[in-house]
Image 1 (tube, rainbow, N blue to C red):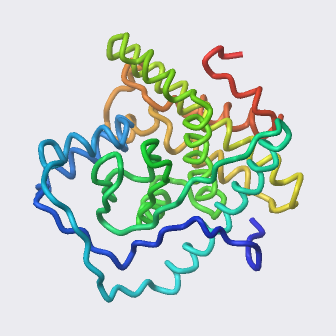
Image 2 (spheres, rainbow, N blue to C red):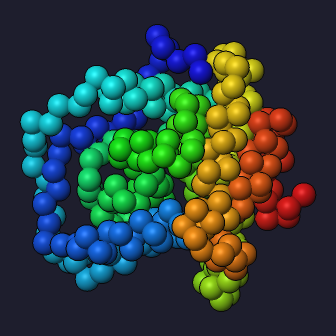
Length: 284
C-alpha cells in the first residue's frame, strides 16, 4: 500500500503514555477467558469487557502519565494507521457528499493495556473495537502482532481491520446498529448471534467499498494488497478460529461469520464500490 508522505488524520487520541489506575482487578485466568471468548468465539468485545468490569463501574478511575517511549517500529505503525484513518475520512466524506450529507468523523484512540471508554474499560485483550456511545475506535497496537500470528500479515491486512471498525461507525451514524440492537433484544441467543453476524459481514463489505473508492481516488493499492485483506478476513472467520482452538465449528455460535463469508462480503464491496451492495440483512 502506498502510504508514505500522505495526509495523516488529526482525529487520533494518542494515549500510549497514559497508564490507567482503577480499583478493578482482573486475574490472569479472567484475561485468558476473555481472549478465548473474543478470538475463538468472536463475542462482542465490549460485552466481554463489560463482563470483566462487572460491578467496578462505580469505582473511580484515573490515568497517570508515564515515560513510555514507543519503538521506531511501533511509531511507524502508528504513522501508517493515521494515514489509513485519513483515507477513510476522505473516502467516506466523498460518499456522503454524493447524498448531500456530512460525514461525522470518528476518533481513533491508540492506547496500551487499558483505557477508559464510554462503553466500559477498554483492554488490549479485547482487540480493536468500536464504541458507539462515544463514536471512537480503540486500538492497542500490540494487537497487530497477534494478527500476524493468526496468519494475516502485510500492511493492508491492518488497513482492512481499521476499515472494518470504521464500517461499524457507519452503521452507528446511519441508525443500523440501533435497529439491530433492538431486534436482538427481542430474540434468543442464536437469533442475536445471527444478527451480529450480519452486522459484522456488512462492516467487511463496507471496508471493501472503502478500498474500491479510495483506489479510484488515489491509486494507493499495490500488488497483493487485496490478497492481504482477504487473508485477514479468512484468518478471523469464526470457523477458522474455532478449528484452530480445537473446537468444532457450530453455526449458532458464530458472531462474525465464516471465513468464506467474510472474504465474499469484503470482495463484494471491493468489486462494486457501492454501499448498496452491502445489504447483508437481505443477503442479496
